[in-house]
Image 1 (cartoon, rainbow, N blue to C red):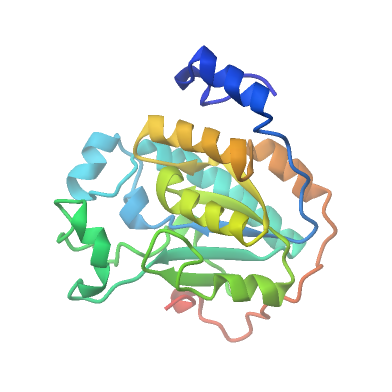
Image 2 (image 1 turned 90 degrees about the vertical axis):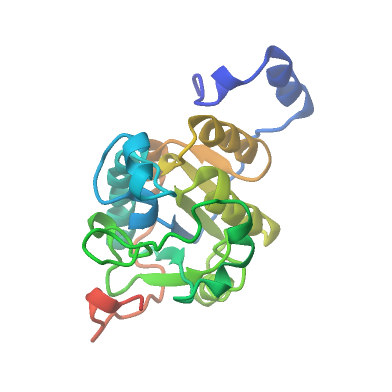
Length: 252
């Protein structure tokens, strides 16, 4: 593979260390993947593409234009997985209206008390319409960074018979990384889609991709992931039927 997004942030010594120590080997794909879409909600994407310094005036967690560049990539992955009958599992945040369950989230951000609502009164945890869940998709609510912590995600993957996960979403340095580390710790083969993830910090995005690729996951461009999914046998999973599911409230 040619130059990676993180190469410009590495010293020559860093590059030499990775090479000499054997990190960054390409692991084999799993045989039964699920696509994870981590926290692509209005609170992190905003309501439209705009420069990040404008977006964060309203949304303290917004990632600006980078979010809206990744969303179409995620949409292609979702469409391919749905066509193949591969599970699509979303995560998004949840909290009490009085904010009590924010817990440790409140310790490191001076704007934490701001209500996560859009100009139209939508909960900021709503997944953006461009890639909203369908009736056969699964949605996991979480209070902490990892999609696994305190949620039924692992049990869903077990029920589906998954041995691997393909991870997209935001933020690369936060909830994506936390989910990837837990997936790794649970012995799921893990792929991170480089251009299907985003962060509010370009340096954090690149370096965390580098670190995950070195130790915990294959970090690959979407074209490589899509090519792999295209070769995957269709309809291998016993997915929810979606019968009678109202997609407007499928994840409430």
